[in-house]
Length: 480
Image: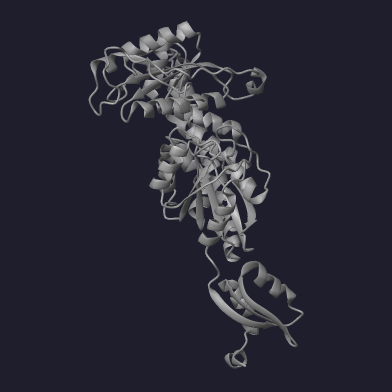
């Protein structure tokens, strides 16, 4: 999206200023502002016909309650990108200035009717709200606009459902969707809650008066709760397997680096650059959902693991954070986080803040963090300079061109924990396996071949030091 294509407000001539702090002008309250530049065209509809959300013509609606006009525009532009990722065609983007969303219809009854007129004029079949709607807001707004209404949370959940490929990923997304759906069963259509007389027909209740519609809701709720319990058990079992693998890596004291950051910031491309892993790289939101663990080496030859994690986004649904908690623990357990941010984004600071909020949720905010500004070949130098001033620990790279990768690898090597225990051992020539492990796992200080074997001085991990203890050179021999 070029500067000319960026979302912008159609300014009301009565409005003298856009960003007026907490004060809301009358014109702001009365206007639904069109955000230009959000329309999308899909050239080949066949590529999205298989998706859970069928190809839809959508109108976006947002409520601007705080921050600047640019913040509101950026949020709606991101919603448009999410809608595109789900396979929809964005026809129109609208923002209303309010002190808070309307409790009944999100935008207020009058604006909801205006929104209905726009939906009819554009031929839209779906409205997507930039926020999480309550069950009441969902059903009441749907009743006014007469087309399907979904919110940002449902849209993100749908995209995750499209992209999940592993058994664990699918289970996590299903659990998140069910947690979201459970309180909203009535909101998905009036037929779900419609009463149907019953045999007795009495309004006083009792046998024969409960309609099949209400019974179906209760049946569905029980079924969903049962399925959720089963999914939680499965995820817990998969978490145990993941923990076992992680503990095995820790037993061998292999340092771990987690690649985390905003969706589509280039995390998988960075992983490929560092390891040659061949992970899927796609210019799409949430292309990676399943953590990828790959082994890499520092320039000085030390092994470490790289974990590519799911991308984050502003207002990431709490259901997803909870469902993916076991996966996100890979970040919390790492020795270093490479926090990747898209240097070409209009608001990289917002990306950083959104991701750090999730770090805090999963208790990863105490892990050392290196901010990696990616896509340097596309970034505005002014933005890069601004980020350098704001972030104490930062490196600028381009995973596409290789720019800055040598500096990144050098910093990673410097930041990773080093073996701490000094050893001086004489290893028999038939224990070449231990010599090899010292090379692979330790920081070698010196090595010489003598008649009795190979004498090695190095700094190694506690586990390896214990295995080397029987071959330690005595203080007297060392002095000799």
